[in-house]
Picture 1 (cartoon, helix red, strand yellow):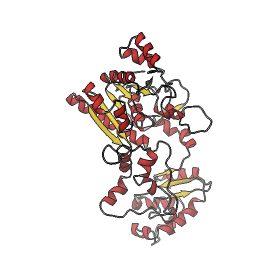
Picture 2 (tube, helix red, strand yellow):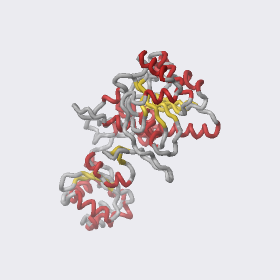
Picture 3 (spheres, one colour):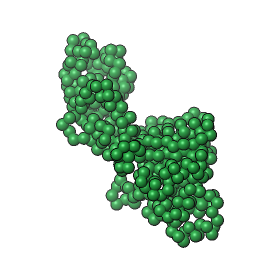
Picture 4 (cartoon, one colour):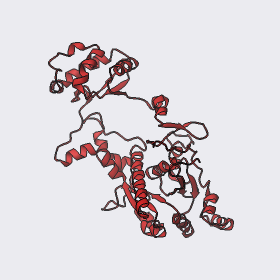
Length: 398
C-alpha cells in the first residue's frame, strides 16, 4: 500500500455488518493498517449477505472490507482474548459494535482494553445508545436509524401510502461517517493531550440527526405533518415531474423571483409571467395545484434529454431520478472521485465521500478471505511460529 495521511495508524476492526466496519474502511482509504477480527470458519456474517440469490460473489464485503487484513480469531477462547489484548496494547484505534453484554463476556469492554493502552481510541457503536432500558437491545439501520427516528414515516409519497423500506446500508454508511468523525476528533485530542479515550455513537442518534429538520420543528412545538402527494405539493417549482419518455426529474427552483421569468420562457410558457395566479410567491402557493397541472402537461411534451438541455441552459437546479445503472455509467461520478477502480484494475468501488487537498488515498485493495493474514498479523504481534501452530491446534485461529 502506498503512503497516505494515516499510514502507520493501527486499527482493529472488531465489528460486524456495516457501520463499524465501514468507519474502519474510511480510515483504511487514507492508509491506516486495519486488522479485521472475525470468527474462524464462515467469518463475519456480513460476508454471507448477498443482494442476488444464488450468486456467490461477496459484493457487499468488497465494499466494506477493502484494504483490510483478516485475522480469524475465536474470541470465546481465553487464548483468543489474550491475542486480542496483545494487539490492542500497540493499536491506535479499536472499533466494535458488539452488543454490550457480549463485550463483557469476551473481555473487550472499555474497562478491559483501555488500561492496556492509554493512547487507545476505543470506538463504541450501538443501536440505541449505552444508557436506558434499551442499551443492550440489538438493531439494524432499518429498525433503529430508519424506522425509529421518524424517517421511515416521513419518506413516503403521501399519507395514504405505506412507509418506505430503506435500502441496505442506507443508514449504516452515514452512521459510519459519524463514527469516523468521532475517531478523528479523538485522535486530534490525543495529539494535544497524549491521551486516548472512548468515543460512542449509535444508529438511533445518527438517524435522529438525519431527520433533524423535522425533529427540531417538533421540539419547538410545531406539528410536523406528513408530506402531501406530489399533485398537492405546496411549491410547484420544487416538485418532481415526468417527461414524455416516462422519466422523472425533480426541480428545486427556490430563487423564484429571479429565475421564474427565464424558466417560463425556456419551457415555452412565458404567457404565465403576468398571470395573477402565479405573479408572486404567495400567489403561487395558493395556486400550487393549478401550476402543477400546467407543468405536468408542459413536461409531458418532450423527452428527458431535451429537458435536461433546456433547464441546464437557463441555470435551473434539478436532478434526474436516476436508476442504479445510470449512476454507475454517470461520468460525473468518476470525475468527482465517487467511483474508483480497484488496485488490480478490474471493476470499480464506491469511495469515501470526501477528499483532502494534497492527500492521496491509497489504491483500493480487494477485501481479504477469512483469516488470510493470520500468520503475518500474529508474527508482527510477537508470536513465534510455534506459538502460531499452537493457536491453530487449539482452534483459536483458523
